[in-house]
Length: 493
Image 1 (cartoon, rainbow, N blue to C red):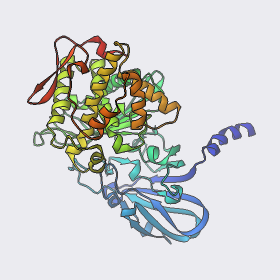
Image 2 (image 1 turned 90 degrees about the horizontal axis):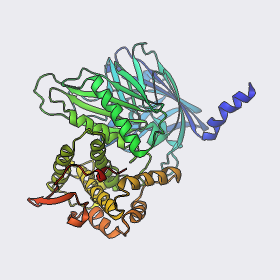
Image 3 (image 1 turned 120 degrees about the vertical axis):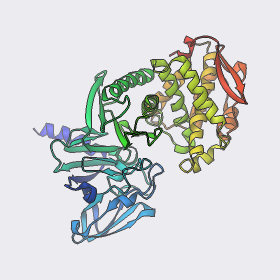
Image 4 (image 1 turned 60 degrees about the vertical axis):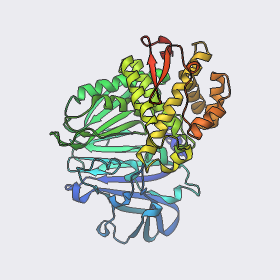
C-alpha cells in the first residue's frame, strides 16, 4: 500500500508546481449571475493582501476585465481593486497564508456581435470561455520575468445538471479535473465549454480525438460532414509530420451569430489553435461556405506543430513562419489529401496568396512593423501569412531542384520538428537559415533579409521553380501557370 502511494505522489512532487484550486458553480440565471469561480491558494508567507493576474487583453481583444465581477456578498471580510492596465486583481484580506475568494465571469457583449470572438459567452444553455478569462492566478508564482510557471490545478464543476455537458481542451465529461500544466501556453491557452454541445469521438492510431459542436447549422454544415472532414484532416496532417504523439485532442465549433434569412450576406469565421486542439467560431446563415471551413480545419491543425511543438521564440517577429508556412501547408496538404483538385489549388494560391498579397498596399512593410501593428490593421495582419507562404513556395521549389527531386521542404520541416522537440529548442530565424542552407545548398541569408525582414517582393525567375511550374505576370502580379497536370514530384514526401 505504501509503495503504491509513493508511486502516485512522486510525479506530483517532481513536477515542482504551485497548487491552485478552483470550484466553478452552476447558476440558475447565468446571463445575470455569470459563472461563479471560487479560487483557493496557499502561499509560503502570511500577508494581508495578494495580487492575482487576470489578463485584460488577449489576441487583440481588449478590456476583458469588463467581464469580471467581484461581489461583497460572495466575499465577507475581503475587499478588492481591479487594476486593468496591470492585468491585476488586488485582494485585501485578513493576514493569512491561505487566500480564498470568489469572482464571477460574465458576458459583456450582445449576442449579435460577431466580432467579439475571444470574449466569454455565458448563456442559459451553454458557456464558452477561454482559459485566459476563466482563471485568476496569484502573481507571486510568475517570478520577476513573468516566467511560464508549472501549476497543479484542481477544478471542480459544482451543481451543474447531469445533461449539461462539460468539455474542454484537457478532458471531456469530467466534473473533477486535476491538471499539471504550464501557465501561459497550456492553462491560459485553453478553452472551456459546457451546455448543449454535441460531442463525438474517434481514434486515430489509438489516440483519442473529440469533436464538440453546438447550434443548428444551415447550408451543408451537418455534424456528419464536419466530423468526416475532421477525420480526413487528422490523418493527412499527422501522416505528413509522421507524428501521432497526442494523448488527447479536441476540436470545438460554436456559432457566433445565427440568421436563417439572407440579411447577413457572407460569412465571418475565426479559428484559433489552443492547447490540445483548436476552436472555430463562425456566423451561421445560408451563405455558410464549406471551403472556408475545410481551410480552417487544415490551417488550425497545422498549428499543432508550427507554433505548437515548433514553438516560436519571438512570436510576432516569427509570424512569417508560424502563419506563413502554416498557410502554405494548408494549401499543399489539402492538395495532397484530395480536398483540393490541382486546378483548385492553382486558382486558390494565385488568387488568395499571390494576387491578394500584391494588391495589399502595405505589402512591403518591414517585419518589425508586423510585430508592432499586427493586431491593429487587417492589411498588416495578412502580410506574414502571404509573405511567408510565398517564401515557402520558393524554398520548396529550390530544395526539390537542388536535391534532384529526392527531397522537398517537407523534409526540412520534419527535421526542424525533431530538433525543436528532442533538443528542447525554440524556432528562430537563425535556426531556420542554418537548416535551410543544408537543403538549398547555399547561404540564403541575404535573400531572407531582403524579402522577409525588409519586405521586398520576391521576383520569380524561370530557374527558381521546378520545370512544370511557370510564372507569368498579369498586371505586374505573378501567377503560377502549369502546362500539364499536377507533377507528382511536387507532392514528394
